[in-house]
Image (cartoon, rainbow, N blue to C red; front, side, top):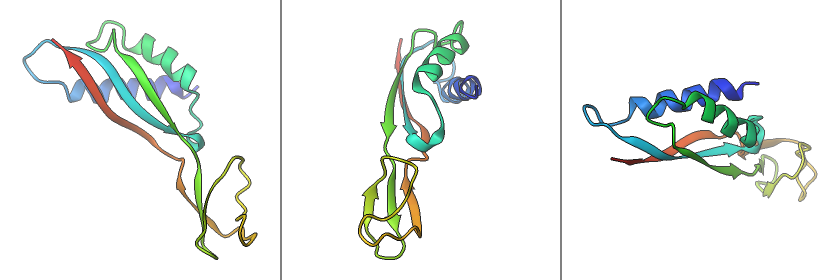
Length: 114
């Protein structure tokens, strides 16, 4: 389960970016997770709750935006949404494609309260 290490990375990243010399509590952390990232959002939320305990993120909620897979055909330049992991262009049936969205795992921002 790599979600535990991802949760630790999120907590570390947010803590590094908190204001210095001021006591704050993080209330929300927004992240984007692509379908191809192999992250299970429910597992990440569970692990985050454990890792965030006794930190400024203890009460924070993860707000997860799941990003769908978008593929571009290198043959005809068509862009399409992929509902499965079979990346065949619906326009020209080419398998020469490039994934342009769906691999994301990004911390977008976070909210704090005094």
